[in-house]
Image (cartoon, rainbow, N blue to C red; front, side):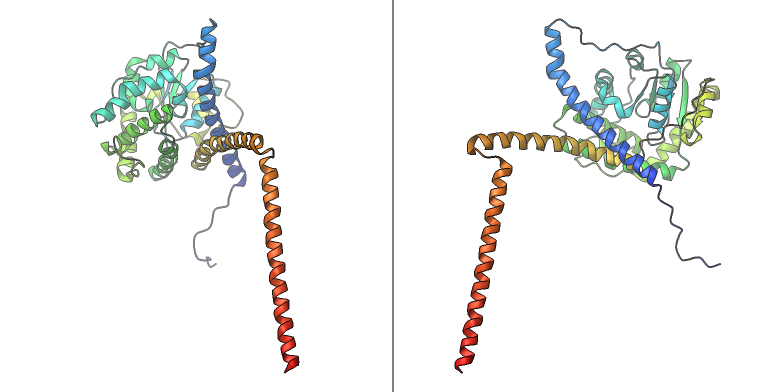
Length: 361
C-alpha cells in the first residue's frame, strides 16, 4: 500500500478549539475587569468607606504554613493543577494571579525582583512564605515559588511537593516560548500602569533565571527571544535537583494527563472527584486571553470617548453624530449621482454631434 506523500495531518478537535477560545476570552475579560475593579476600589470605594469608619480589610482564612507546593516550571500544567487543588480544598496561589495579591507581590518585588534589576545580577533572596499562608493560601503553584523548594522544605517539614512535568523538554520549550512572546505584549504597551510595570520587572527577573542570562534584567523592550538550549538545560537541571533533594515520600512527579487518581492518592484524599480533571491555559487559550485582555479595555475606552464626543457634538450642532453622518452620506451620493448624470449627458452630446457630422458628410 502506497503512502500519499507527506505526514498524516492530525484531525482538528473543534471542541477543544472552542473551549480554548471561550476560556481565553473569559480569562482576558476577567483580568481587564480586575484592573477596573482594583482602580475603583483603591481610588474611590476604600477611601470613602474608610472616611465613614468602615473596615475595608478583606478577611481570609489563614494557615499555619504552606501544605502543598508546586515545584514544576511554568507551562507544565500548573494552572490546571491549581484548579484541581482548589477543588480539593487547598486555596493555591498561582503566578497568573500574583498581581492580585498586593502584599505578596510587593514582597517579591521589593525583596528580589527590583534589587536584581538595580544590581544587574540574579538575586534569589529569601522570600516570606509565611505571608502567603497568612493571606489565605495553603499552596503555591508555578514560578517564582517553585524555585525555592529547598527553603520551603526546610521551613515546612510537613509540606508536600508536586513536580509537574511535560512528556518532552522540546514540547515544554515550545509552550514556554509561546508564553514568553504572548505575555510580554501587555507589559510592553501598558507600562504606564503601576501593576504592569511591576509585572514587567518580574518577567525580567524570571527570564534571567530560566535562561541563566542577566541580559533580560535591564534590556530595552521588546525582550530578547528565549534561549532554547539554556532554557531546556535549566528546566532539566531543575527537575533533576528536585528529584535529588526532596524525599520520595514528600514528592509526587506528575503529568496532568494522569488525572485525579495519583493526586488524590498522594494527598491521601479518599473521596476523589469523579468530574473531569481541569484542563485550561493552553498556549492557544493564553494567546486569545492576552489579545482579549488588551482589546476589551481598548474597546470600552473608545466607546466611552465616542459617547462623550457624541454628547458634545449634539449640544453644539443640535444634531446627532449618526444623523450628521447620514446627511453627509446623502450629500456625497447626490454629488456622485449628479456627476455621473453630467458625464452621461456629455457622452450623449458627443455621440449626437458625431452622428450629426456623419449625416452632413
